[in-house]
Image (cartoon, rainbow, N blue to C red; front, side, top):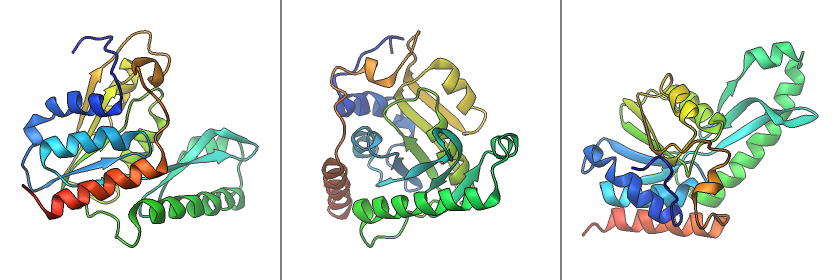
Length: 222
């Protein structure tokens, strides 16, 4: 894969990424988890190619009060919380403030869980090979939170897979995940959207439709 690949859209990027994940095809232990919303169209193509189930792994950033763009931690599917203790200590953020932000983001995470999954339970990942997919990585903070949160559920193996990413972010994640596959690592990277011809926002409706299609395909395999 050329270092400066520009993908047509997320679905095409997913098909390219799937070819790099061929070793995980047709394995009963594999599950593909997408970081919504943009990761879902990519992950759908990966799951289809690997004949693996698809679900979402929702991550919500816990922003520093008054400076919400700065993360002090994250919440993930299943109610898992990861805190950056060094940030909390350095900024003197009280436990009460941490809990208040957590409650607020937990409500939003729960809303998205209901929207995307309905009454279905969170996916079972214990001892399974989990392929975490997003549409790209700039700083990688959301993916890092996802990996750390997922580890608390004792998967057998964590594979991070993205079509495009900053090279140093891929290297950082290799210290946390069992395997990291970045199909394209253009330099200078700047932003994920630069490496897609069509980077229009993925809607909640598209996420729900792709997840429903994936479940239908799993229930009625060819």
